[in-house]
Length: 430
Image (cartoon, rainbow, N blue to C red; front, side, top):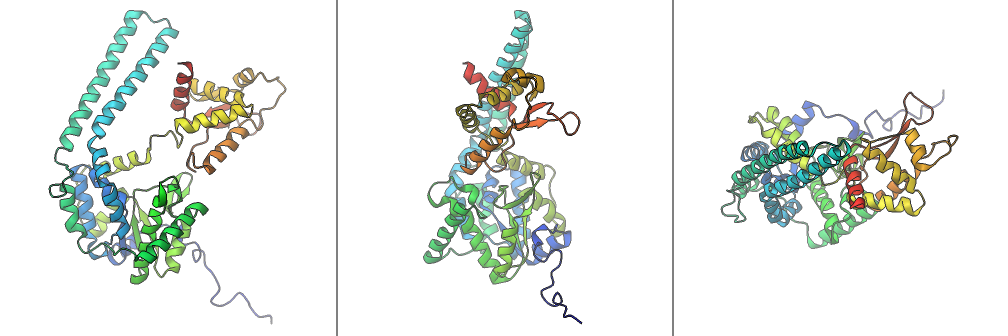
């Protein structure tokens, strides 16, 4: 009988090398919250300045309920103190900035109204009436924004002796902050962090554009977590508001858990399983397990801040400069017809039908539209590789089909990009 070479300790199971794909259960979270290591990221502490007083109190109470399992990497506090004043200033000025942005939206809305009124030959007196109503609504909203902002932040101060956030945070973190790396280990970690950024290895490579060795900051946090988890030989729950792909495994645009590389690295360094939660999910998961109450509205407020944090002033990952560069490169390669189709589709609520594409491009009727989007897709990939747009940036131009396979019925511009494309069109006309 032949020897069974598949038997023995080398046999593998479904999750043996794929632990990152196992969905955490309530028992898993109970275990890590009561026996593991719970490490908050710097953005979690800095966001305390962006929450309402109630939400801030609930998150601090949640961290306090973790007790001696709470552990803060030294690099997290380095980032906290480095960014505290700018975060505080940003938070205090958020109302004024929102009011200023609202004024810009008001001007844009008025231009849209005026353009439409001209197209349909609306009487001047009716146009004036609608413009007056529009301005009245925007004025009310701006006034409300300023009023709320002034009330919420009147007690927040740069003075650490009177800052209510510091007053709550100091006792919560007492005795729970890790030591800094030695100078030699710190230099080695910086070098490794920068190597990972260059090789696009997690974590931290999405911070490539940061000045100096700032791109290595995420790796410094991670290295300190690895050391502490290895020392305790325990599972880790990393709480972070960072939703970029160099931390998270993304599926269909959704964060499904930590990157498999990070899960494996923690295991090989002597730790257990790696779990990751945003502050909102941390509150929702921890409250029933650690048996503390959440006040109504706290989770919603934290979710609001997380939503703002993921909106970096771009449209689906694109900025005005990046989109203009796409258009410039297409034009340079003699694909200005693609630019014209993108702009036309944006004007038509995001869709250009096939007939319009033929007309815009002056194509003969027997020409196929197969491969029409390839130049756009190729240059988009180039912009990703250059760091001009994130990996998660949406597709600019997509073929549409009425019913299954066959010729394209037209092409669409992603809805998030429509206002940006139109904005560039307005600038070209002015």
